[in-house]
Amino acid sequence: MAMIRYRATCLGLVLSLLVGCGGSEQPAPAPTPSPSEKPEPQVESSTSTAPAKATSADASGGAAQAAVAFNPGMTAMFKPTVPEVVKTDENPVTPEKIALGRMLYYENRISLGQQISCNTCHALDKYGIDPREKNATSEGHDGQFGGRNSPTVYNAAGHIAQFWDGRAADVEEQAQGPVLNPVEMAMPDPEYVIKVLKTIPGYVEAFKKAFPGEADPITYDNYGKAVGAFERKLTTPGKWDQFVNGDMGALSDAEKQGLSTFISTGCITCHMGTYLGGQMYQKVGLIQPWPDQKDQGRFEVTKNEADKMMFKVPSLRNIAKTAPYFHDGSVKDLGKAVRMMAKHQLGKELSDADVDSIVTFLNALTGQIPVDYIAKPDLPASGPDTPGPQSKVTRAAAQKDSDS
Picture 1 (cartoon, rainbow, N blue to C red):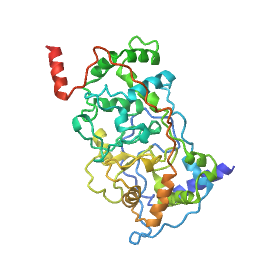
Picture 2 (picture 1 turned 90 degrees about the vertical axis):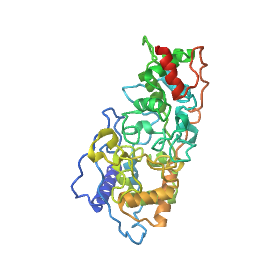
Picture 3 (picture 1 turned 180 degrees about the horizontal axis):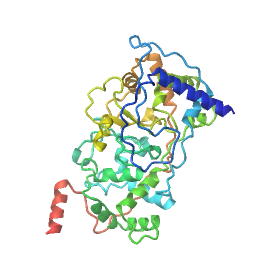
Picture 4 (picture 1 turned 90 degrees about the horizontal axis):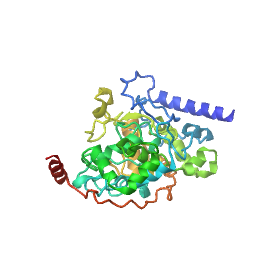
């Protein structure tokens, strides 16, 4: 009965926030849904409909928000806690797939220049982000830079979809994208990736173990399944999960007050559930235009006008460790990011005290990296026919020679 009362309290709080933010307005045209394949249902809503607009209680003065007393029932909005593995019927996780996926995650021979692996842009010992980022986005093949910030890979398997624009349904599909992206790993086609893997004897054996009974187990889909299986256990439980599960002493009083400020400000509209985000799309610059915004977001995938400047709402887990922030990596300071989100997404000017309070709470969302699980394995040795590093020019020339 206590949990029912907690959930009712939370629901009432969310509804009051929405009503206070103009929840009676007519909804905008519905954005395009995510790819049909999705992770198991989570607490969060998977709709991409924009939350109601907000106005500042004191837009000019930046006064502190009206305090909302901490209530243990607030934790109901963030259940269930992060699982050990994000399961899917489409790709059952096995030790053999994980072992293969771990090797492939660190494998740079499946990039054309053989200098880039998944771990290059999503370093597992750095909370899954690119520690090299100096220009807001990651450097790829031949010194090219992508247009979007590399999001963390941790806990991503539980999201509604993958990439900032949601163009991949799951981590299995996502794993196949960067390898063929000419700006990232630049492999020319799936066939060439498979050709490389088949020339490495250790991978021939590893694929047989991971996909037993298949006549030709080294396929591009199986590459994605192996990496996806490995990533499905890249979760980071921490003291926040202990707190949500009932250990009220896991967070300090300042962190609890930060949670209250987070909720009363309206951040909870998009950042709730297991991952505090990752379950919906939202327009960048919902209330006030986002500065220097050129990226059209999900519109570039769907061509639906309602998807212009819509991006997947990021998870806030480990947010204190995953700068730079936003789809363009334009902000490195977490406090500045909080202030910008309040202004452009909620129409609120936050006081320094409120920003500091929210940042204190966000720091409590840092989880534990699975150090043993992510340890880099010994990669199998190349075979006599394994290609060496190539540029676009030499690869094109080699293809021409083989075709003649």
